[in-house]
Image 1 (cartoon, one colour):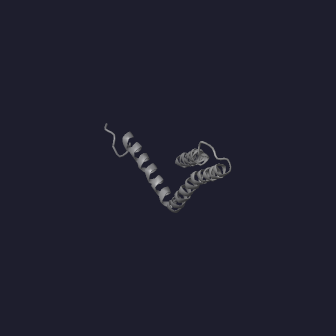
Image 2: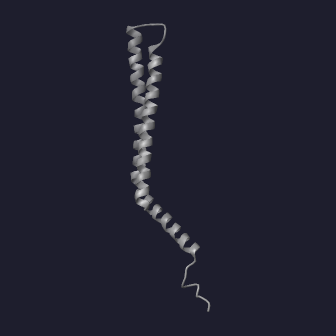
Image 3: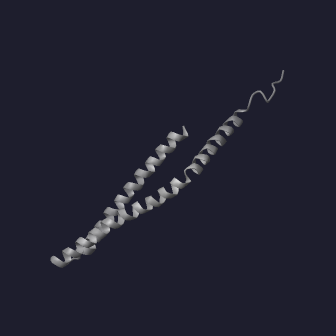
Length: 112
């Protein structure tokens, strides 16, 4: 006796159907959160920008004050500007990494 192919779906077909369903669910979810994603991205760019700019400007300001009040053979302005820039970049890296981890955890929780 031969089996009717309509009764038993092939393993590849069920795997394919599952993959299509997963991708469709992700697409629908992305379409629902488009506005939040745009504003979130703009906010993140602002956060990264300010987290670099503020320490850099504070370092430069402190350096200018030190150069004015305690002149020496080396420039406090350049030194503290560079240190402020490094601190700002590390700070921005920290924020971006943390947000990336939160996004990944949220995606993993919703994909299950």
